[in-house]
Amino acid sequence: MSKPKMFEKPSGVRDYLPEAVTKLRYIERQALNCMSRWGYEQIVTPTMEFYDTVGMASSTSDHKLFKLLNQRGTAMVLRSDMTAPIARVVSSLLYEESLPIRLSYHANVFRSMEEEAGREAEFYQTGAELVGDASPEADAEVIALSIACLQSTGIERFKVAIGHHGFLQGLFGYTLPDREADQQRLMQLLVARDVVGYRELIRTLPIEQEQMERLEAVLQLQGGRRIVEEARALVDEPHARLSLFHLERVWEVLEAYGVSDHLMLDLTLVGDFSYYTGTIFEGYSAELGFPVMSGGRYDNLLQQFGRPAPATGFALKTTRMLDAIRVRELVAVQPSILVQYDAARRVEALAEATRLRTAGERVVTRRVDDVSQLVEVHRLEDAVKLGNGPVFKDVITFVQFVTEHG
Image (cartoon, rainbow, N blue to C red; front, side):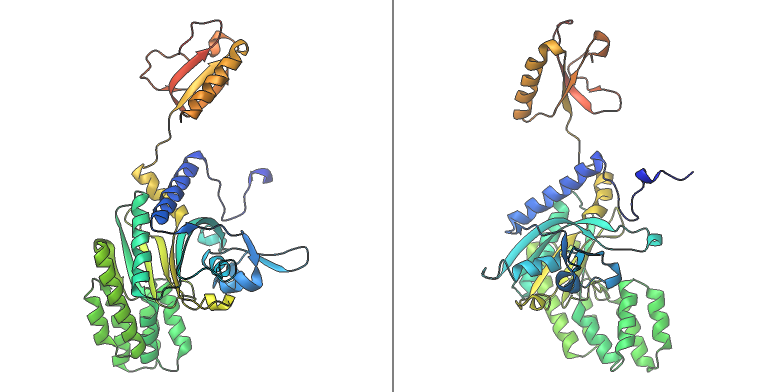
């Protein structure tokens, strides 16, 4: 028998029950506080934007955008990421602000996914953007900040893979000149982490054996800083050389931050947004086995809004991190105090509940009409659980028909 329509939800969305919301807010609070300590100020943008501005600039595939029409027939979208809306704000409301600008956010975003893929269509991100600085120092700052944010939420066992969009562009352009379609196909296979498909495609290309080996060798460019030298030996092309030089400078700064134990180079890394132009990175939690953070440099995006400026940033995949937080049991629900009362002593009871809440306690109030409804405490140090409800660390009773506690 099918569920009644009133209980069904659209595919790809979920309800967050109290335990999940507690963890979600914990991640949000910890990450935003961490960003604030690094000088990033929080921004809030609309859930809905114009398709012709933010929708077009988002680089989310058109078929993955949630589109709708307003009452005037203008095409709108639900935001699919926060980078494009922030680029709009920096280029308009913050146009007079001097660069660099550091902004943070926590927001829900929407992407239409195939139902059979089982991916979420609405999810939360907590992230930061650094606008107006093209230096390796800026890339290193946002990577170090992303590491600090992961640590602040209690995720300790993770690795951050760093690559550079320009290296693969240089390699493919050098190896497959005038074959842009094949270059894009190889890029897409790397985005999907389809190593088998990547190798199979290489073998079908009408190129020399040396070029084929060069393309396959890139799959081994994962590891520590020595990977840069291996990459230099693989391809001698100006764009690739500049990318590797930039990566070396980023790595040096990250060593100064003292976070190199969390790092690895991965020159097969390809960002899944087309606006990435330089350094890209992803964070992987050992508990989950898939990315919980991603980011990169996008130096061409702001010029679409009339304020050309380099920029870099990252987003924590907050919804995914809920599972890691659950594994580590980092968030404990604060026990409550139960204040129970009858009608005759309601005023006293509610006044005491207000006093306790003002003092920072979590308080639940409950009216009782006869002795059988009372919750009794045998020892004050014992926690009391009322049915399937919250755990109470104390019970205070205001009734006339029993001896009062407290």
